[in-house]
Length: 279
Image 1: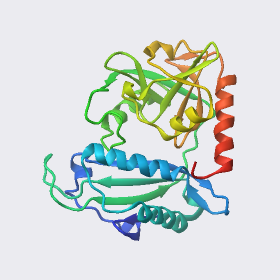
Image 2: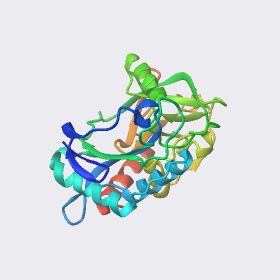
Image 3: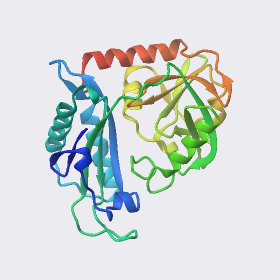
Image 4: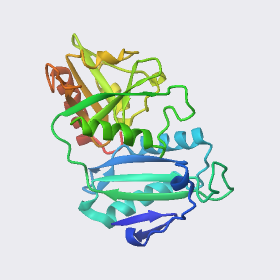
Protein backbone atom coordinates (compact mmCIF):
# COMPACT_ATOMS: atom_id res chain seq x y z
CA UNK A 1 0.00 0.00 0.00
CA UNK A 2 1.04 3.59 -0.69
CA UNK A 3 0.48 6.26 1.98
CA UNK A 4 0.87 10.04 2.08
CA UNK A 5 3.13 11.12 4.94
CA UNK A 6 3.89 14.78 5.61
CA UNK A 7 3.66 15.84 2.00
CA UNK A 8 4.98 12.80 0.14
CA UNK A 9 3.60 9.56 -1.26
CA UNK A 10 5.67 6.67 0.06
CA UNK A 11 5.43 2.90 0.31
CA UNK A 12 3.75 2.00 3.59
CA UNK A 13 6.66 -0.28 4.44
CA UNK A 14 9.04 2.67 4.10
CA UNK A 15 6.93 5.24 5.99
CA UNK A 16 8.57 6.36 9.22
CA UNK A 17 7.10 8.24 12.18
CA UNK A 18 9.16 9.23 15.23
CA UNK A 19 9.10 6.94 18.26
CA UNK A 20 8.40 10.14 20.20
CA UNK A 21 5.36 11.12 18.15
CA UNK A 22 2.61 12.30 20.48
CA UNK A 23 0.04 10.25 18.59
CA UNK A 24 1.96 7.14 19.62
CA UNK A 25 3.00 8.08 23.15
CA UNK A 26 -0.12 9.80 24.49
CA UNK A 27 -2.82 9.47 21.80
CA UNK A 28 -2.63 13.19 20.99
CA UNK A 29 -4.28 13.41 17.60
CA UNK A 30 -7.42 13.32 15.51
CA UNK A 31 -8.57 11.35 12.49
CA UNK A 32 -11.27 10.89 9.88
CA UNK A 33 -12.26 7.68 8.11
CA UNK A 34 -14.18 7.74 4.83
CA UNK A 35 -15.66 5.12 2.56
CA UNK A 36 -14.55 5.12 -1.07
CA UNK A 37 -17.33 5.62 -3.59
CA UNK A 38 -17.51 6.04 -7.38
CA UNK A 39 -17.52 9.65 -8.57
CA UNK A 40 -19.67 10.84 -11.52
CA UNK A 41 -16.58 10.95 -13.78
CA UNK A 42 -15.94 7.26 -13.13
CA UNK A 43 -13.07 7.83 -10.75
CA UNK A 44 -13.11 6.72 -7.11
CA UNK A 45 -13.30 9.31 -4.36
CA UNK A 46 -13.67 9.69 -0.61
CA UNK A 47 -17.36 10.04 0.17
CA UNK A 48 -18.48 13.28 1.88
CA UNK A 49 -14.89 14.57 1.99
CA UNK A 50 -15.94 18.19 2.56
CA UNK A 51 -17.91 17.27 5.68
CA UNK A 52 -15.09 15.08 6.96
CA UNK A 53 -12.51 17.84 6.49
CA UNK A 54 -14.80 20.26 8.32
CA UNK A 55 -15.07 17.85 11.26
CA UNK A 56 -11.32 17.24 11.19
CA UNK A 57 -10.74 20.96 11.67
CA UNK A 58 -13.31 21.03 14.46
CA UNK A 59 -11.60 18.16 16.30
CA UNK A 60 -8.19 19.80 15.85
CA UNK A 61 -9.56 22.99 17.35
CA UNK A 62 -10.98 21.05 20.29
CA UNK A 63 -7.51 19.62 21.02
CA UNK A 64 -5.78 22.93 20.43
CA UNK A 65 -3.76 21.56 17.52
CA UNK A 66 -2.85 23.61 14.46
CA UNK A 67 -2.66 22.14 10.97
CA UNK A 68 -0.79 24.25 8.41
CA UNK A 69 -1.78 21.84 5.62
CA UNK A 70 -4.76 23.41 3.85
CA UNK A 71 -7.82 21.52 2.63
CA UNK A 72 -6.71 21.65 -1.00
CA UNK A 73 -3.50 19.83 -0.11
CA UNK A 74 -5.42 17.25 1.92
CA UNK A 75 -7.81 16.72 -1.00
CA UNK A 76 -4.84 16.19 -3.31
CA UNK A 77 -3.30 13.76 -0.81
CA UNK A 78 -6.52 11.74 -0.63
CA UNK A 79 -6.78 11.65 -4.43
CA UNK A 80 -3.13 10.63 -4.73
CA UNK A 81 -3.49 7.78 -2.26
CA UNK A 82 -6.63 6.51 -3.98
CA UNK A 83 -4.97 6.62 -7.38
CA UNK A 84 -1.82 4.90 -6.11
CA UNK A 85 -3.70 2.05 -4.45
CA UNK A 86 -6.39 1.47 -7.07
CA UNK A 87 -9.26 -0.91 -6.31
CA UNK A 88 -7.55 -2.17 -3.13
CA UNK A 89 -8.60 1.08 -1.45
CA UNK A 90 -12.10 0.69 -0.02
CA UNK A 91 -11.68 3.08 2.89
CA UNK A 92 -9.34 5.98 3.50
CA UNK A 93 -8.17 7.66 6.68
CA UNK A 94 -6.59 11.01 7.48
CA UNK A 95 -4.66 11.07 10.76
CA UNK A 96 -3.12 14.18 12.31
CA UNK A 97 -1.04 14.00 15.50
CA UNK A 98 0.72 16.55 17.66
CA UNK A 99 4.08 15.54 16.18
CA UNK A 100 7.18 14.66 18.18
CA UNK A 101 6.98 15.46 21.87
CA UNK A 102 8.42 14.56 25.25
CA UNK A 103 7.53 11.33 27.04
CA UNK A 104 4.65 13.06 28.81
CA UNK A 105 1.68 15.29 28.15
CA UNK A 106 3.55 18.51 27.33
CA UNK A 107 3.69 19.46 23.66
CA UNK A 108 6.60 20.85 21.71
CA UNK A 109 6.33 23.66 19.15
CA UNK A 110 6.78 21.28 16.20
CA UNK A 111 4.82 20.58 13.01
CA UNK A 112 2.11 17.95 13.26
CA UNK A 113 2.41 14.53 11.70
CA UNK A 114 -0.09 14.04 8.88
CA UNK A 115 -0.81 10.63 7.35
CA UNK A 116 -3.31 9.66 4.67
CA UNK A 117 -3.66 5.89 4.32
CA UNK A 118 -6.03 3.50 2.57
CA UNK A 119 -7.17 -0.02 3.26
CA UNK A 120 -9.77 -2.55 2.12
CA UNK A 121 -13.44 -1.95 2.83
CA UNK A 122 -14.89 -3.79 5.82
CA UNK A 123 -17.29 -6.56 4.82
CA UNK A 124 -20.12 -6.09 7.33
CA UNK A 125 -22.82 -8.75 7.78
CA UNK A 126 -26.35 -7.78 6.65
CA UNK A 127 -27.39 -7.05 10.24
CA UNK A 128 -25.55 -6.14 13.43
CA UNK A 129 -25.68 -7.57 16.93
CA UNK A 130 -24.81 -5.23 19.80
CA UNK A 131 -24.30 -5.37 23.54
CA UNK A 132 -24.43 -2.57 26.07
CA UNK A 133 -21.31 -2.21 28.21
CA UNK A 134 -20.91 -1.27 31.88
CA UNK A 135 -18.60 1.67 31.18
CA UNK A 136 -19.99 5.17 30.69
CA UNK A 137 -19.13 7.86 28.15
CA UNK A 138 -18.25 11.15 29.86
CA UNK A 139 -20.36 13.70 28.02
CA UNK A 140 -18.69 16.46 30.04
CA UNK A 141 -15.07 15.53 29.21
CA UNK A 142 -12.67 17.62 27.15
CA UNK A 143 -12.76 15.04 24.33
CA UNK A 144 -16.54 14.59 24.21
CA UNK A 145 -17.76 14.73 20.63
CA UNK A 146 -14.26 14.92 19.14
CA UNK A 147 -12.86 12.26 16.80
CA UNK A 148 -9.53 11.71 18.48
CA UNK A 149 -6.95 8.94 18.34
CA UNK A 150 -7.51 8.25 22.06
CA UNK A 151 -9.47 5.08 21.30
CA UNK A 152 -8.35 2.69 24.03
CA UNK A 153 -11.77 2.85 25.72
CA UNK A 154 -13.37 1.83 22.43
CA UNK A 155 -10.90 -1.02 21.99
CA UNK A 156 -11.74 -2.41 25.44
CA UNK A 157 -15.49 -2.06 24.85
CA UNK A 158 -15.37 -3.66 21.41
CA UNK A 159 -13.31 -6.55 22.77
CA UNK A 160 -16.02 -6.99 25.44
CA UNK A 161 -18.64 -7.11 22.67
CA UNK A 162 -16.70 -9.65 20.63
CA UNK A 163 -16.28 -11.87 23.68
CA UNK A 164 -20.07 -11.76 24.05
CA UNK A 165 -20.51 -12.75 20.42
CA UNK A 166 -21.62 -9.29 19.28
CA UNK A 167 -20.25 -6.97 16.63
CA UNK A 168 -20.56 -3.60 18.37
CA UNK A 169 -20.60 -2.18 21.90
CA UNK A 170 -23.05 0.52 22.99
CA UNK A 171 -22.32 3.10 25.70
CA UNK A 172 -24.57 5.04 28.03
CA UNK A 173 -23.33 8.43 29.21
CA UNK A 174 -22.80 9.41 32.84
CA UNK A 175 -26.52 10.22 33.16
CA UNK A 176 -27.39 6.67 32.09
CA UNK A 177 -28.75 7.83 28.73
CA UNK A 178 -28.17 6.15 25.39
CA UNK A 179 -25.04 7.64 23.81
CA UNK A 180 -23.21 5.83 20.98
CA UNK A 181 -21.21 2.81 19.88
CA UNK A 182 -17.45 2.46 19.67
CA UNK A 183 -17.47 3.72 16.09
CA UNK A 184 -21.15 4.27 15.41
CA UNK A 185 -24.18 6.39 16.13
CA UNK A 186 -27.45 4.74 17.16
CA UNK A 187 -31.01 5.28 15.93
CA UNK A 188 -34.10 3.63 17.44
CA UNK A 189 -37.66 3.28 16.19
CA UNK A 190 -40.72 2.99 18.42
CA UNK A 191 -44.28 3.21 17.14
CA UNK A 192 -42.99 4.34 13.75
CA UNK A 193 -41.01 7.30 15.14
CA UNK A 194 -37.26 7.49 14.47
CA UNK A 195 -35.12 8.94 17.27
CA UNK A 196 -31.41 9.35 17.98
CA UNK A 197 -29.48 10.80 20.94
CA UNK A 198 -28.60 14.52 20.64
CA UNK A 199 -24.99 15.69 20.47
CA UNK A 200 -25.34 16.86 24.09
CA UNK A 201 -25.39 13.17 25.05
CA UNK A 202 -21.65 13.13 24.31
CA UNK A 203 -21.96 11.16 21.07
CA UNK A 204 -19.82 11.93 18.06
CA UNK A 205 -21.31 14.19 15.41
CA UNK A 206 -21.22 11.37 12.89
CA UNK A 207 -21.19 12.28 9.21
CA UNK A 208 -23.59 9.47 8.27
CA UNK A 209 -25.75 10.41 11.26
CA UNK A 210 -25.84 13.99 9.98
CA UNK A 211 -26.82 12.89 6.48
CA UNK A 212 -29.55 10.54 7.71
CA UNK A 213 -31.06 13.38 9.75
CA UNK A 214 -31.17 15.44 6.55
CA UNK A 215 -32.69 12.61 4.50
CA UNK A 216 -35.48 11.16 6.65
CA UNK A 217 -37.79 12.43 9.42
CA UNK A 218 -36.14 11.87 12.80
CA UNK A 219 -35.97 13.46 16.23
CA UNK A 220 -32.89 14.14 18.35
CA UNK A 221 -33.91 13.44 21.93
CA UNK A 222 -32.46 12.06 25.15
CA UNK A 223 -33.26 8.35 25.45
CA UNK A 224 -32.84 5.91 28.33
CA UNK A 225 -30.35 3.16 27.60
CA UNK A 226 -33.10 0.52 27.60
CA UNK A 227 -34.85 2.33 24.74
CA UNK A 228 -32.52 0.37 22.46
CA UNK A 229 -33.52 -3.08 23.73
CA UNK A 230 -37.19 -2.02 23.77
CA UNK A 231 -37.14 -0.66 20.20
CA UNK A 232 -39.34 -1.99 17.40
CA UNK A 233 -36.33 -1.58 15.14
CA UNK A 234 -32.93 0.11 15.38
CA UNK A 235 -29.85 0.77 13.32
CA UNK A 236 -26.26 1.92 13.49
CA UNK A 237 -24.69 4.55 11.26
CA UNK A 238 -21.05 5.10 10.40
CA UNK A 239 -18.88 6.02 7.45
CA UNK A 240 -18.06 2.37 6.74
CA UNK A 241 -21.38 0.75 7.75
CA UNK A 242 -23.70 3.34 6.13
CA UNK A 243 -27.13 2.47 7.65
CA UNK A 244 -26.74 -0.91 9.37
CA UNK A 245 -29.82 -2.65 10.85
CA UNK A 246 -29.52 -4.00 14.41
CA UNK A 247 -30.73 -7.57 14.75
CA UNK A 248 -30.26 -8.13 18.48
CA UNK A 249 -29.42 -6.18 21.65
CA UNK A 250 -27.84 -7.99 24.61
CA UNK A 251 -28.96 -11.30 23.15
CA UNK A 252 -32.57 -10.19 22.62
CA UNK A 253 -33.79 -10.14 19.02
CA UNK A 254 -35.57 -7.01 17.84
CA UNK A 255 -38.91 -7.47 16.06
CA UNK A 256 -37.54 -6.45 12.65
CA UNK A 257 -34.10 -6.01 11.07
CA UNK A 258 -34.53 -4.09 8.92
CA UNK A 259 -37.97 -2.76 9.70
CA UNK A 260 -39.81 -0.33 7.40
CA UNK A 261 -38.32 2.83 8.91
CA UNK A 262 -34.81 1.41 8.77
CA UNK A 263 -35.36 0.26 5.19
CA UNK A 264 -36.47 3.77 4.24
CA UNK A 265 -33.30 5.23 5.76
CA UNK A 266 -31.15 2.61 4.00
CA UNK A 267 -32.76 3.35 0.64
CA UNK A 268 -32.50 7.12 1.09
CA UNK A 269 -28.81 6.89 1.98
CA UNK A 270 -28.04 4.51 -0.89
CA UNK A 271 -29.79 6.92 -3.25
CA UNK A 272 -27.65 9.79 -1.95
CA UNK A 273 -24.43 7.84 -2.53
CA UNK A 274 -25.59 7.05 -6.07
CA UNK A 275 -26.28 10.73 -6.80
CA UNK A 276 -23.19 12.43 -5.42
CA UNK A 277 -19.83 11.70 -3.86
CA UNK A 278 -19.63 14.92 -1.82
CA UNK A 279 -23.06 15.80 -0.42
